[in-house]
Amino acid sequence: MECFEVFSNAKMIFQIGGNLGKSVQNMLDEANQRVAKVEINQAMEWINDGDTVFVDVRSNESIRQSCIIQGAVPAERGMIEFYADQEHSLGKSELKPEKRIVLYCTAGGQAALAGATLLDMGYGNVVNLGSFQGWKDAGGPVEDI
Image (cartoon, rainbow, N blue to C red; front, side, top):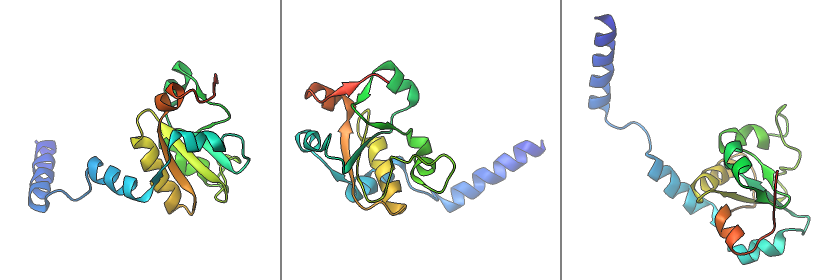
């Protein structure tokens, strides 16, 4: 009975307070406004320039089932904050705020959200490539991981 009462009270608070947060769509819209999109042809010019880091934010399982952009750093969306923080034990040395960071995922949404996070963390040059499949279809170089 006590659990039901707690649930009922929580439900009542939610109904009184309304939606207290942002929807996923709101978050995606905001991220897409903040994180510039880059065309695949432009990104292909950056693949070996030394100033650009390609970052795959798909799940490790998704990457294992396909492949990755040549030289890209795998960094699951759910771990991007840890990987991007150079002072954290999980920080990835390849991710540097002074580099151009090109993010991609399955469709572009996770890359946009990860990009907004990196901007919040002080990364200044972050772009969203969109989908890995678009890169692959355009003949961009890929490799197994």
